[in-house]
Image: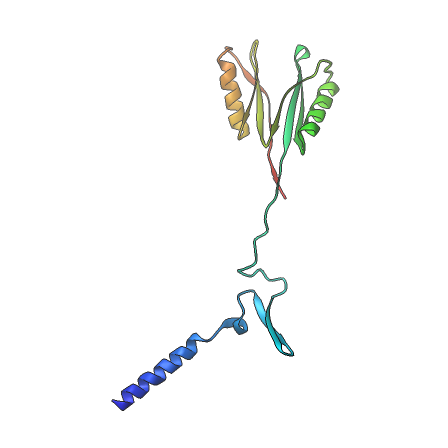
Length: 163
């Protein structure tokens, strides 16, 4: 019986010592121990991506687009992938004038999305969408309510850019 108790005590003592073992000198993952005269600390491993290292945060930059038309001449000007609505509008007006437009008028400005213009016999429909296909489908559907034949005249996306 004494042998059994002695064996149990030794087993328990060994088990406790096994639990006290720590990797990297007691420092968390991605760090190593460093000590000096009277001090000890854990410092990050250089150029290491430790488990505790925060993931880099993506930052999104809005993108704008604008559509300008000279309806009597059938001219469309577009400003796509611009960082401000004003920039998109200026680019669209410049595009309209460069194509010969004289009565260029702002139709719409959109942030972070897609636009499509569908034309029918007497109808001009401009609608947004999450994707180019959704914008085109919405514009064609709306145009088709008033016309027998419609076609997508313009579609483009200005989606946010991750930096």
